[in-house]
Every structure is written in C-alpha cells, then in structure tokens.
Image (cartoon, rainbow, N blue to C red; front, top):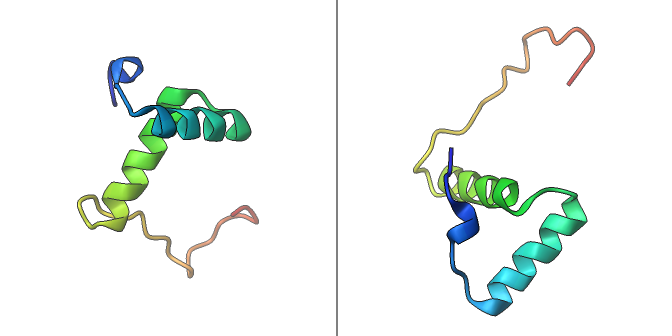
Length: 62
C-alpha cells in the first residue's frame, strides 16, 4: 500500500491530468496513483500479472 501519496509532488501538467482522470473515474487521487503504478509495474515485468484460467468455473460471473 502506498502511504503519503498526497505529499507526492508532481509537475503541474502531470498533476492536472491525474486530478482530471481521477474525477472522470470517480476515484480519489491516491487510488488512481496506486492503479497507475501497479499497471506500470505489471506492464514492465516488475510485478507478476494476475492470470486467469479460462477452464475454471466462474459460476456465471466474470
């Protein structure tokens, strides 16, 4: 879990974009930072990706 993300200083254009996306997604800034960071780490192979087994039963829910 990220702590003290409110204190993360970003360049104004980056901060504005982050705040706009957070508002659009109806998420708080800290949640969005966690999502972006996790996806970046997964994309760049620093964090394992959650794989789903297509053959497993999901009881009708995805």
